Length: 123
Image (spheres, rainbow, N blue to C red):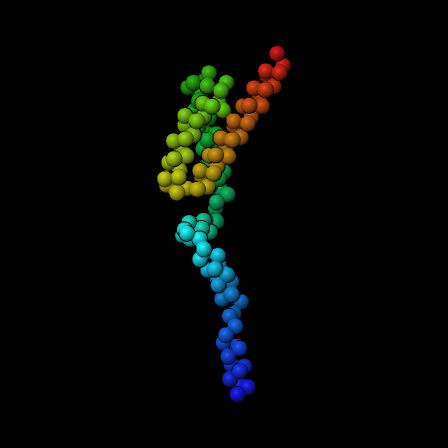
């Protein structure tokens, strides 16, 4: 009988790798869209995608050379090309690229606002 007891306890306790899987499954049980999180975990180059988004926005800023007066209000003028780029990135489900575009847009806006403040206060 003690053999049965030992046998039951050995079978009933999950292995460490199974324990991790159970915890991960429990995390996804309450989530309405578990596939979204699973897709994000598959992308090891998320940081590179974010960097590509920031660099893409910098390239789009360089293309403003066609409209040189737009550099004075680049924080607002970037909305013209930032929003379509964001929509395209999100439709293609490139979350990292979209995050990089947003990050670059926020940095551009804040730098433009700071420079505007410096110029305004110096006169």
